[in-house]
Amino acid sequence: MSSQRFKVVLLGEGRVGKTSILLRYTKGEYNDRQVSTLQASYLDKEVSLGEGSIAKLSVWDTAGQERFHALGPIYYRDADGALLVYDITDAESFQKVKQWVKELRKIVGNEITLAIAGNKIDLEKNRNVQESEAIKYAESVGASHYNTSAKANKGLTEVFNDLSSRMLTRRTDKGGLTSGGAGGGGGRGVGGRAKQKLGM
Image (cartoon, rainbow, N blue to C red):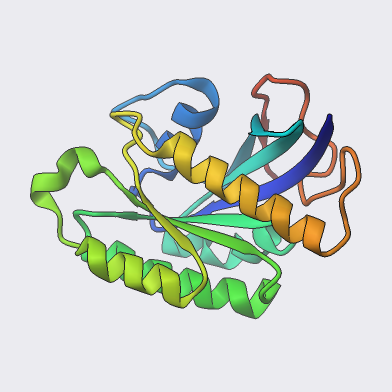
């Protein structure tokens, strides 16, 4: 059985649900009154990908507020993957995803695997971002697109499984497949538990 360690960053505007996605996915927790992230923290999660492959993810939650935007490169310059999150009820948050993608490409280049999540599908009746537009954009930048809801616990396993599989394929294609390989997570994950660290 081989395991690979990967660093994944969650990016998006404040209040799109990044922290809620992280807590729901790694710990099964959800809080309607989740406080905005001020710096950065991460949680670890193991993903079984079949055929004896395990991805050990260190998923970093980054602050989306403008005043923290300059700190972004500190967290994602060594990332293997990024999940870019927008709120389906907030068109501006989707436009911000496009800015994050441009910034990622500038800092990290094409060596990062991307996925885009349209979050808060539990508020579908208030949707302000057309799903077809979001999917078309995702395809144009080589990203997958998923509809998610941290509140309803929908789509999270699917998007992280997809991202993990694609990161593993990228690393294998580059010839970097070694047991416990050093993705950006750098020795932080343990077993099947979710562990939290605070950045800075």
